[in-house]
Length: 167
Length: 100
Image (tube, rainbow over all chains, first blue to last red; front, side, top):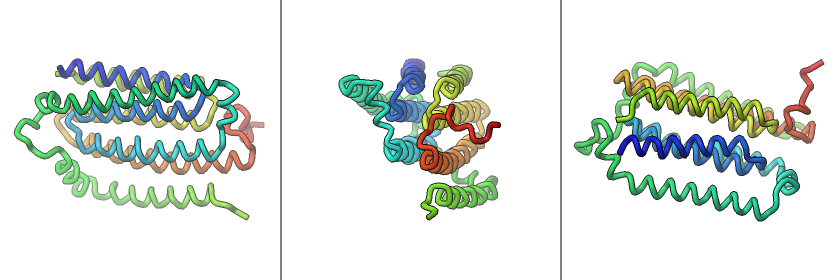
């Protein structure tokens, strides 16, 4: 069962990664990348890293990809897409990506029960590994954690300086 | 039970796809997406090895990588935006201001 799930989600990740680099329209690439991120999150659950699976969906598939899509739409690259592909093919691609996501979600929700039996150390209804990660993060890796906040501050200031209006 | 080798192989395949994307695409935004894919392949490797070693340190590292990736995406997309404002293109073949 675990093998089956691995091949299913690993295969999905590889197929959509290949589609991502082959699609001409950057919006399609971004949507394919979202599917890759979600299937990687499912693999993280299989590896017993529930906290990182949640962070993967929230931060990567949520925040970072929305940022990418915002920039793609801000730059108004749709003219290029219109000349390379018909609206009909674009529609087909969109529905394909949507169907892929839906399939993933359905399989994921259907496989929760199966997952619970294969997860290491999860049989007795123990809460996930969030506690263990937090404990390590706030004791052994406290200094890197604090440096990370400075890094994020620098990134915010840098993004504002680079992208803000100068005149 | 899925072996660590399989996860490592999957991570390697995803990383190679990301590298291939960097080589064949010329759109700066898609290049950034390929870099994100490579970072994710490394994350998968980290988590798989962390499980096989029975330690959770690898997951903390993945947490830091995700933070760095978020910061990198924000700054990189800001660079792309200001580049587009000046040059009206994000095709990396046409951006040659550092060449002479």
